Every structure is written in structure tokens, then in C-alpha cells.
Length: 116
Image 1 (tube, one colour):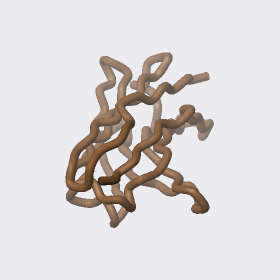
Image 2 (image 1 turned 90 degrees about the vertical axis):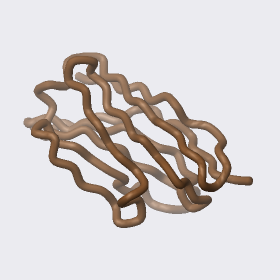
Image 3 (image 1 turned 180 degrees about the vertical axis):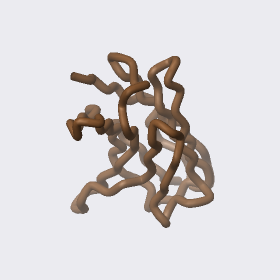
């Protein structure tokens, strides 16, 4: 079992930045991938970014060049640095973990609102 707790969401103006953090209840060193997903009202949940144990990353096309995912196995955290935020980035952001045995865990979500 892994419990994931997100923090760092909030209200920001277009062009601004936010940093989301996800803290895991146990060591993430053995977890295959950690990632961030988001879900906007009326839309399906979508992948934003993910990072493997070997630190390979992939990003949604819509956030490439603006968002950066990082993973600290010593601190059991995964962060998402979001720059140049746009109104269309508004969503609930969820932390995700997938183990080598393909068990999947989700955090409770944190709201990000980009508005002037």
C-alpha cells in the first residue's frame, strides 16, 4: 500500500508558476513510475507527466517545455514545477504511483486554477 498526499495547488494568474508536491507514505525507490494526472470539469482524467524509477520522463504535448517533473527517492516525493500557466491548465491534479506489480495508487487531488 502507498498513500499519496498532494500539496501546492491554488489560484494563479495566467503566465504564473506553481509547484505541486506529492509525498508518499513509504519509500518510492521500488515504485516503477510516479506521475501527475489532471481532470478538468467535464473531461476525462489525462496524463500530465510521469517519471520512471530510472528517471525517464514523458509529458503531455500540451505541457512540454512548461512543466517539469522530478523525483526524490530519498525524500519519497515527486514534484511538478509548472511555469507559464494557462487557463486551460485549470484542473484537479492527481498524484499517481504504479508499482512493478502493476498496483496503482492515487492521491486525493489538489485544485489548480489559472485565472486573472
